[in-house]
Length: 75
Image 1 (tube, rainbow, N blue to C red):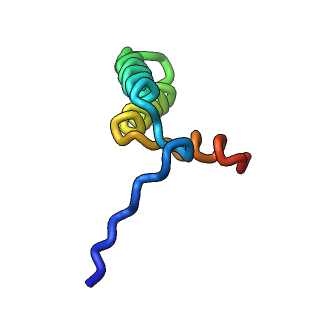
Image 2 (image 1 turned 30 degrees about the horizontal axis):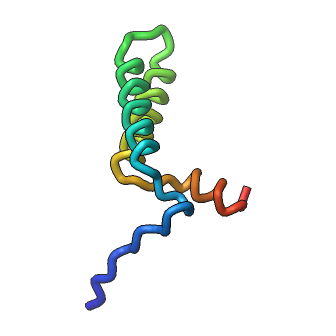
């Protein structure tokens, strides 16, 4: 049975620097916290919570497929 795990991408192909990781995590947590505030449209709350959680997760993981797409010129 082959238990190969995905290898992290090289720097510049979607891998976030330490500063970028911190920014992603902070921005994601701020966005998720803002989503916790009651609003007239609950769909916006759910979207903001999902986007904030995704940003924080990407920052914690250290890779971003959007950055990889932009830096590799596949736009």
